[in-house]
Image 1 (cartoon, rainbow, N blue to C red):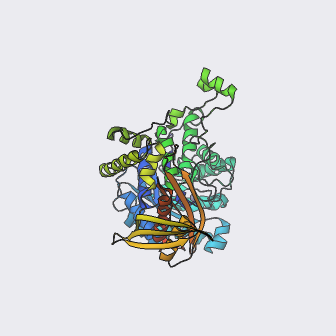
Image 2 (tube, rainbow, N blue to C red):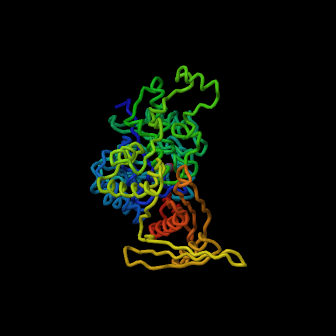
Image 3 (tube, protein in one colour):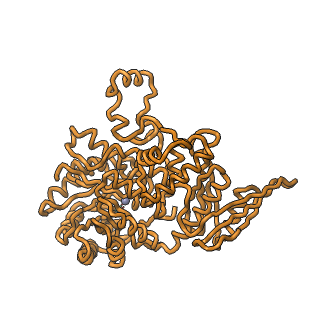
Amino acid sequence: MADYVYIFDTTLRDGEQSPGCSMNVREKLQVARMLDELGVDVIEAGFPAASDGDFESVKAVGDLGLKATICGLSRTRHGDIEAVARSLDTAKKKRLHIFIATSPIHREFKLKMSKQQIIDEMCGAMEFGRQWFDDIEVTAEDAGRTEIDYLTEYFQAAIDAGARVLNVPDTVGYVTPSESRQLYQHLTDNLRHDGSVILSCHNHNDLGLAVANALGAIEGGARQVECTVNGIGERAGNCSLEEVVMALRTRHDRYGLHTGIDTTRLYPASRVVTAVTGSRVQPNKAIVGRNAFAHEAGIHQDGVLKHAETYEIMKPEDVGVPENSLVLGKHSGRHAFSNRLETLGFSVDKETMEDLFIRFKALADRKKSVYDEDIEALVLGTESSGPWHLDAISIHTEVEETGQSAEASLKLRFNGQAPRIYTGRGDGPVNAIVNAIRAILDQELHLEEFHVSAVSSGSDAQGRATVRATIGASRYKGSGVSTDIVEASAQAMVNVMNRHHQHQGKDVNAPRVAAAV
Ligand code: KIV
Ligand code: ZN
């Protein structure tokens, strides 16, 4: 369909690579379900060869039986390709995504390979991958800085070797919108194929041009856009899914194209990714920012009241911004709770729903009003998946002449074994908790950031503790939510330990693999 633009979401792969955005398997599954509801065509679930954890999460996404095609990233190495094949063996629709760099700077300094060697390497990988995959996407990493004639030759070889999708990433966010259009126009005009091959754009936002460059690419013939929810991704991020989708929809008069996205799920999708990653969007972020539909100037307010289109090119309801925030309480029933979960973009199975409802009731007993943020925290924020589990915490503080001293006792279980008490002392409760955790780890732990904020409004609000810590050479984030902020802090530190545990064993030589944070 020439007027259809495929949406390839890489929130779980390229998005997850951005500092502070790493996700555990449970969180990835939430995001994957949400993406499927949103209507994306392809979900890039990860880079299975990067680590056992990445392999398991790609496999878990493949096992969900979603409508979308599930894609795994791979270098040209046979081991990487086998890892994608094994991780996606149960996926209903699957895609292998092979990449190798093509630009002069990568050829000379990173790969130390000639142009022809790179083409041969890619064709060899294609041949190997075709044992398992009919649907193969080939990427020329750093295409934006690759000589156009060589790029055309590389992609022609990929087509001849059976590639279905050709991805032309601007890996370093260097090109401008008109260059992007010209590049795709050149490929559209010069590549020979049977009409079934799709050109894909993948734009990074280093100059703030990712969405503009994606639109340029579409003007030049791209029919797949690689993007992430909230535009998360390496450095300045990737092309933002919600922005490019709404640009195509709002300016249908100009582009005449459509996507399969249910735009009323865009705002919930953004909230889910914010809640999972802890990375808030700026208030003035297009489409999903807090102020995206707020009219402050009197003259604008007057205009909007008289006729919304005077100052609004989209309606908040088009992107699923709720008209009001429904507050639940202890008298709210299952139906109201499950409706709210759905409105917030979560889809959970029956068993999880039951568990959440019990926890919702317990929370509603402790605090009068349960807000959307509390529900998001219930779904995502309180349970740390990993081997360590916090059963209980007790803190003893004394005010001594020399200052305050505190002792924290953490009752922790490792892999479901009998609980053990770990203690630490410090000049305050958080310091004592960190010292208790330090005693467990056999590596240096440095706490870089620690803050506590209220999840919602009211003096009975839950507190969310967020920490960023370095263990050895890796940085991790962790968060915990509780009505007791000391408990929330301990949960956040346990979360860090779990992420560290998961991260151990990653292939550190794998290029562009998500760092731990
Ligand atoms: O930015 C990039 O080049 C990538 C590829 C691996 C697709 O993320
Ligand atoms: Zn990228």
